[in-house]
Image 1: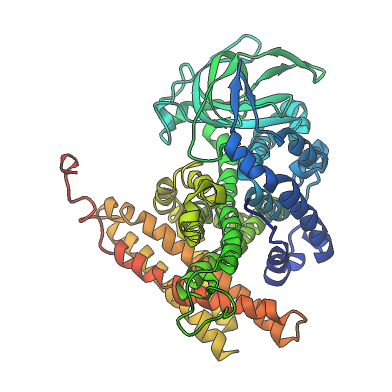
Image 2: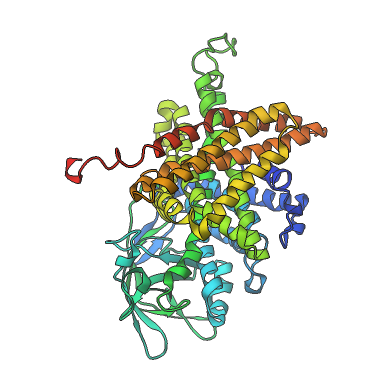
Length: 593
């Protein structure tokens, strides 16, 4: 059975050595001393390794079962959910007035990676609830907040979001679910939603669905969509549960992965719903949840890559196969361990260098969210809005690729279910699709985010990179050569791609959109290159100051050099593809495919 160990030490290093969170000037960060965050992460790590990880294979093997309208979760899930709830983990960063601990989002993100790496399907139940609660917190009335949030923060009740319908996915303007106004101010919701994660299960007393629907007589298309709170059980005035609402799970989807999470077809038959936010402004309210979810999905890609890497590393150290071409490294054994072979090392270094930089990227992104929300920083809000499709798209594309590489190290055993490696690959695959497929993320980045606020935020990102290079150049020749020069070259590739879109995209929008996925990946590599440069600076300083853990920092530098030399040059390839434009992409008529 695969194992999982929470990356507590590396997370602590990023928080305190790289991001210097206690000096960030963000409200609440001064309390995040290393001793405190270390204690929180150690406890989260224990739950991840001891409680959640052992259930990962159980959930994959058993899946969920629909019986008489009730979904039964896999063995052990209910008990584990009670442990997570009793520890207060579900409300870690939620407001205290609703039962949360109001710790910064960055700490919640760090814990979230550990829980997802241990058991993604399980963690989705609380993750979706957190997103639904955030939407109610941002857009709900005081009465709605008081009614739903205390029990959702504690996960006594869980939450969902209902967007997709059988005939429409990303194009939500085509939805058919209807909302009919009632004399008492409520609505009657009728329609069908599909792919609803945690839509029905046996781990909570109530499930609070957030449902997109159209009010009769409203504007056409996406402008006519509103958002509604539709509880599984109606809630009485005193907070007790009332009658069963007209919503039911009609079927469970049979999926490639995340078998332990119930992915439901939800039928709404005149269900009582309550408007959340304003009429016909449902997408604005839903995007509060979706943007949070997209960052969480990017974190899932990273988390599964880390989990798969840990097991691939164990196997490469233990599995004896062949001899090192330069001479036997295990002369007393029948063969050398796999890890002596350069191509195995290449694969492991790909995985390690991605996971460590991806972790820094997602935690940096979380600090931007904290800066925006806790300090009211509009520039930070604009920058994280720009980076959200990169975090979601790049980390999940690359995260999936890394699980495949980890599986490959096992050879034929990686293809056998007993090894457990295929589950990482199958579970990671959905992250590239849900919460907006990655092609859509790329279109959002190029079509909307680059030009947002007159291009202010992408220019701020370029200035951030330039400032880091300028502030740290000339102090160490090796650092300049190994980190700053590659980062500068990659950043120039990103700027050249943006300039191409400005010059050619106006003439023919296809020229920009045909290069959107390459641009997303180019941007992602620059972000991870920036993270590696920042980590190299931190580790270099630690070594210069006489650290007591030289091996850790020397390993960090070596891993960073690998990424800068072997992965970051991919920006030139992506730029070359972008600059070919749309002619070859659009050359065939549809009937000629």
